[in-house]
Image (cartoon, rainbow, N blue to C red; front, top):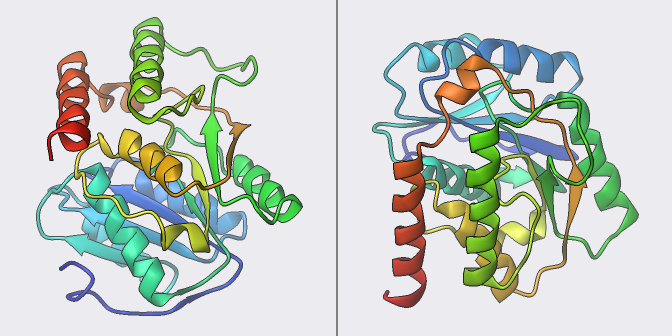
Amino acid sequence: MAIESSKKEEIIGNEVILLRAYNEAKVIKGVLEELLKNGYKNILVVNDGSTDETKEILESFSGKIFFVNHSTNRGAGAALETGFEYIRRFGKVKYVITFDSDGQHCVADIQKFLKKFESDKDLWVIFGSRFLQKSETNVPFFRKIVLFLGKIFTFLVSGIYLTDTHNGLRGFRFEALKKIHLKMDSMAYASELIDEVRKNNIKYTEVFVVIKYTDYSLQKGQSSLNAINIALKVIYNKFFR
């Protein structure tokens, strides 16, 4: 397992920012520098078998961040579960904030999650949503269609309606990680995660976040064919396993 072959260090503090990265060498340095500049000292990155210079960039931050390496690319769900498991075992924190490594998320939005948790002690999971209010950032038309179909599909599968089911900016109270265990390795984990929230009767809410679309992030987005494959995997996992 990736954790067994990695340096094991305790993460102690109020929160930990968890990123998963696959071939993000072009942008991840800037993302990490911005997080550190804004005072976030507990940063855990799961390098999901990158074949570019992502690993070397993470090593250049040694002593400033925590990181775990997958030897091969296992997928977004597997990388997130590896991060969750590391935090379950070595984390002494209150909150976990998942954050994309491609530069789409705004560091300023992290405080919204932390303040929301502090104001409601029964709240265990917070989903970021770009659709709760109008944003200055324009969501590309095709992306809107894919995301709309995704939230309808997730509602049909899990019974939970969210305005933005595949937004990677999420918040978890540490206790939630003991209940939520992801088995799906691919991007299908997003629907599985929501179903885990339902099955465990976990209190959740949404907060508005801004997504910064760039040519880089759009090129790395899910294709329509991949979205169909993800839907089929979710159906199989829920009804036929």
